[in-house]
Length: 113
Length: 112
Image 1: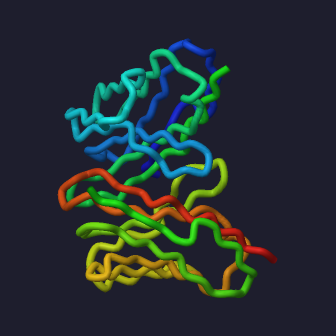
Image 2: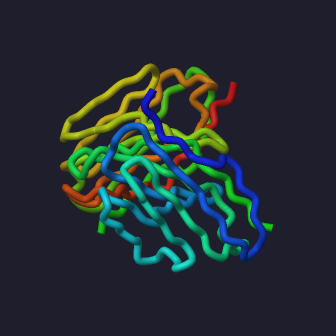
């Protein structure tokens, strides 16, 4: 089945220790998104790629970076995690601008000690 | 800038009852999406509403879109415990923009 895969599902890191979360998709969708979701809140968009074009949200901290080396993979790098970065990180994909139904991966739960 | 508001934020209802979740949005949005999220899990796409008057049904859930009123509703019929979850609506910021604006979510608890 076509799907969105995230690894790892759970990540524990130490304060200030860089971490990378990965996302892959077999849907062959053009758009890939990274969201941060904290408890009892709606997902918050960090950035997204339309093909190779990177689109950063204005309020996404510089501490968060992303890479999309090819259509299938996208990475979220947190350069110096703080306690406030503990959250669920969700990757999603959509086919195109004209059909924006987003399909979400299972998420990575990040804990910062 | 598109704003999306849901109400209620919390909803407890007894099994077998009917209820409606409302989703209002602030500016023109051609399309409206409904998602379900179980505790600790990711979001699952429920409905995609693409035009004024669109109505979609899946089991005990029915979603509709009124673009003139800038309102979408998610109606629950004869609720069962398995429907307990958080439901989000989301709109496109504008046609051709690949970003979604999410509502605050409605946490639905079905009480036996």
